Image 1 (cartoon, rainbow, N blue to C red):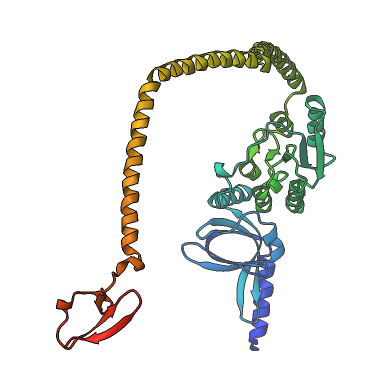
Image 2 (spheres, rainbow, N blue to C red):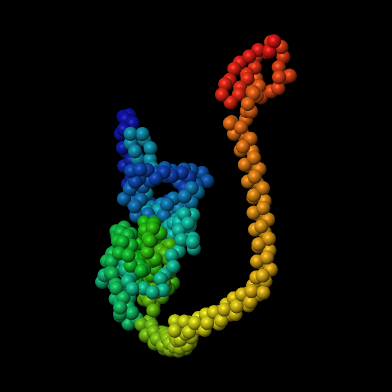
Length: 411
């Protein structure tokens, strides 16, 4: 028997396996997985007795709606292949389904849990829908029945509305990306509210509104947004993230727009109410003006001057009477006051004359010409006037008369 090379053996095994297991279904539990940066998915399946390595290439991964989780039980469709350089075989997966559960349902629950943990559903993030709306942006397919229904209701309920139609795909592989871009553009228009939606369809048809990229775009909007996707029984992820959920696109318009007939009735009521209020205000102001007119007349400058003139005349008479009374009282006391005044003057004159005589006497005494008598001299020492008995023997002193000054010594 001729020996086979390792390569030849691996090639024969590869041919045998790939022809035998070209399309199979394998169920098992995910024991490990890696989403590679290249886009490929590497994972392992196991049961109670064995494990097999699996790989899913990028194109198939992109079509898988949910993500693998550790321990999840799945059904994998694919084929068995051999990597001949290492003699290893693995399962090449083309499709993965959750065991006993649809892939879309699992993907929905996985994304819902993720967005909930990020706070996308919190009531505190919900923006209120304005009560008075003048402009609106409709993010949907331009030729869709949903758009036609919405425009029909707008025409019926509120013709004065400014409507912006943002055309976008609403199903298919590229729909989620287009919807997110359309939402961002609608947000830049500064409208009062955005309605994003489409008509009914299967879960696959509505799936674009379950994509994370659309949820991110909805959460980032500054403008209040209404999710109006499918029928009332349809629930998509955009319903949880949007500020308001409408069961249908038509219902969304009815929820955010007032009925113009109701507005006209309300305006009529307000007009009548304002008319009654205005008449009441006019009556009140008229009464006030009349009252102010009377008060103004009472407080006019002429009346004020007349009143002041009367008060002045009364004060003048009172002053004259008071002055006359005081003069009368003063006249009776005048002789007594005169006598007291004369007595005081005589006393003052006498007192001042005495002062004058004293000063005159002192001046005469201080006159240098009168200080010395003939034959007499002033004795002083150290510029002080003294007597001779105050001078000791041998001390010098000064003798000064009216004309001469000499310095002598006592012997």
